[in-house]
Amino acid sequence: MYTLYGNQFSGNSYKTRLTCALLNIEYQWVEIDILTQENRLPEFLRINPLGQVPVLLIKPDDAPANSQPTLLLESNAIIRYLAHDSALIPKSDIVYAKMWQWLLYEQNEVRPNIASVRFIKKFQNMIPSRLDEYHQKFAKSQDILSYVDGQLSDKTYILGDDMSLADVSLYAYTHNADEGGLDLSPYHNLRRWFERIECLPNFVRL
Image 1 (tube, rainbow, N blue to C red):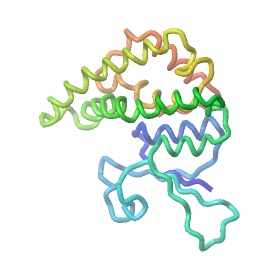
Image 2: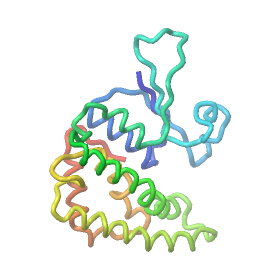
Image 3: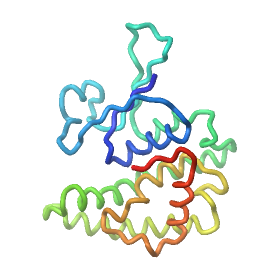
Image 4: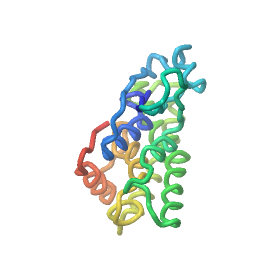
């Protein structure tokens, strides 16, 4: 039995929902409102002291009633666990390493920049205290979109012909970059990639 704690607007949480949908994995969803700081309440901090979503609670169906569930943190670790032995995990060692290369790039570059400009513009209404940060990360986000677009110039998916977790992770924060004020129209490869992912069986939207 899986229970996912997440937020419906969070790209990191969305990765877990999309992975479950693509793989037909059943789970219980618990919505955590990060805008009202529900993630900072004692009830949630007992689940994750870091106060972050998503969190995956794992309790096997045959586990004793008094057994403690396993908690898994960090979105890319969660989707890697959920996708075990699935087609979303490359079989080749080098391609598997490249998948992790993109998962790390997504967390180190994509999320801190594209997700931040989206949050500042859409959810914080461009508050003056974050405008300098917004403009700095906006420029960096344009560079990131150009880089990913270039990497897709001769590929169906980011690793080649097959969809993988790298696509799930990258898609979560790039497909709605326009909500941060970024113009996606110049990135033709990126937009075609969005369309391919959105045509996959069981695809769910953010």
